[in-house]
Image 1 (spheres, rainbow, N blue to C red):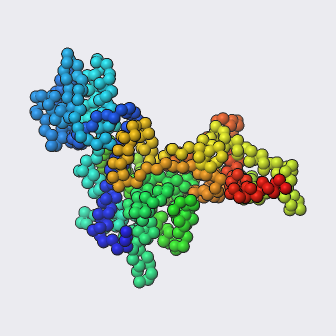
Image 2 (image 1 turned 180 degrees about the horizontal axis):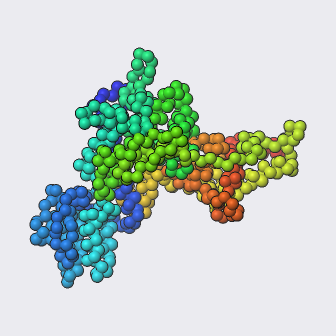
Image 3 (image 1 turned 120 degrees about the vertical axis):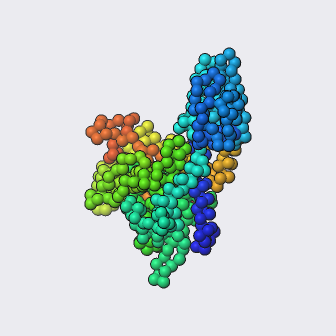
Length: 566
């Protein structure tokens, strides 16, 4: 793929494809996750496409047999016969019939050709439940079903073409495009003032975005496309041309979830966090170090990644709103609440209007520096142990095993090991009894949690859903594997501080949870949690694993064994 030679027409087509695929994939992912919650047991009946279309169309009063009057949405291309024949109206609009047998409203049949991965799964399960309910409950159940079809937010599962276009126009009006990151004013001219009000550096965005070329002065343009797009995708969706060949997949910025950072839990990373990832890379992955780039170019790329993440998270929130049947805000509402540039103390006023989606997302980024995990300082001895310095005698020789200093070091390792296997940390359940990362191998991270819900489905249904998901251009779902702690390769950084933060607050977007920390002043209770100071013992134990005999290659273990025998 020649990114540098891509013309405007092809670029727009590529971007449109990425945005469309992300939108459809997100809808399918949400559907499958909801299906897991409903717990369908057997393959449910299929539905016509007009069942889904009906939920985004207008409404017409229709009197149904044995049910009160309800608002029944009518598809644009499936007119209802004036409400005179409720059964005909319902069959025409939804592909289902009601029977009036001694005053009992029962759904008898569902006729459709909707693929199994679509809304029919959920509706089919609801209908199965109604048919299995008691006769006296069925009229209320049918009424509830039809009300859900009209206004029920949990059952609304599709964003129609008109809503999709409305969302695309909103993104253009606020963010421009990934190729031209400026909003477009009414006269069609670029207007950077809005993004500036949210604290974005327009000059850095323009240097990173667009086609690849160099000015006569040597200033490089198109930095993101030159260095990042082949893995992370034009829109930051993590599905660039080379992504399918990489394990793990590149990060999808649009969800606003980042794994390796200094901030607590699900908080956004700081600017310094992203700079560190870009500078150092991510060991054990295909993410390389870009230390060779000038610092100003790395700064520009970090700014652009933040822009893509804010833009993508805004798009996802808009899609979610439309799918739940909520009103899509206007451009003024969507981007209200500025300016969001931190004051002298680094504080930003939090937007209160839920329609200010952009302001709400940007606020989480601007407050990241306030959410940094600052560990309690380790003891002086612990600092030396973590640096690999062993206890020594006064003359500088290694301390013996029965020396007080060595006993304290070994006691720290023992406490760390106890936490590793204890209920408070429970590390072994994922990383394995031998710390090789084989405790569990079937879980998924946030980006593929929907796949986990399919494990209870018949194999044929599961394979069909995954095939349809991949056919839309999405990457095949993969399991997430816990870290092999004996390898000594830590993706989030090998500094003791980095490992402390991974343990303390977990790894966002993955099954790695935060450790249970006891409140300050609480009595020690290893079954309920650990103190912040005790976490250093666990860090000490983890850091020691690559140097234990079990972690060495077989030939080294054999040599060590022979040496011990001699």
